[in-house]
Image (cartoon, rainbow, N blue to C red; front, side, top):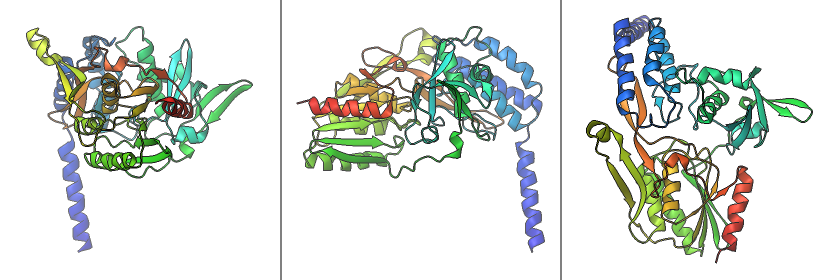
Length: 407
């Protein structure tokens, strides 16, 4: 019997492997489909340095060497780097795939001149546990100078990468690959120091959110990457209602742990608790229609009030781990004048995404097809807080102090 089961499993494994193997012509067709879907629907070529036609020519030569699914995934990942934004991704990976940003990152750098300076640390993450802090100058990754190592993730079609391109490449580099251990070297006053983030573990976050009351009138609600779970709405309602019953009329709403985004339903469900009338929260520009007809397609989305309205003051916290729908909530609460924003620039994930699937390999991918704006017309990715504060604790304390000063 055991021999029979083993033979059956072996045959099934062989069958699956055989079914997944593709001809070179099929890989070529999937390559063409991927390029065309991006070419026809990507909504941000107007601001990216990418030359997508040139990218196609360059990667066609690499396509000639593809013989396996793993090699094809690696090729598509390289093409994704041409668009240098975390909202462009595959639904599959290999052991050597780079981690997604910001969801897979625990440290965030900005390029200033020839230096790469830490501008953000993920709270409770491995980088923080290892001792990395805001303001440090990163000089090497796994013993290779950062500027040299990051070039692997630079778009090949971009001749002179700007700051946005370098930001993307450097942060993908520092997030690391799935099968590698990171060594991050920083410059110190008397030399340099090595940090090994992957020797540490991240803090466990229980539940969809956490909350506490700091003062009789001041509460804190922090979302834990749960904006894609509709049950978060009920959990938020329960906590907010309890706080209001206890006399809380000042709130810190912490969105510094929502890197994976979520859904509009959850976002509007939460925002609806802070308004007493229907209000606009985000502008859309659907570029597919405009490209086909030369007629701009613009519309504004509204939030409807829900439940017992929280009418008190709100300080909203954001940083580089405020992504996608989290970013929409920030500009929405700002546009509705229902929160004062504290923190840093956000993840900068472009637009609203749509999903696609390649014909033969069945590899799924997503790209932004709709441009998003603050209701004042500012592109969402360009929004900056009223109070820019990089250090996590300093940001929190500043918001707390500001709230306690409000009447």
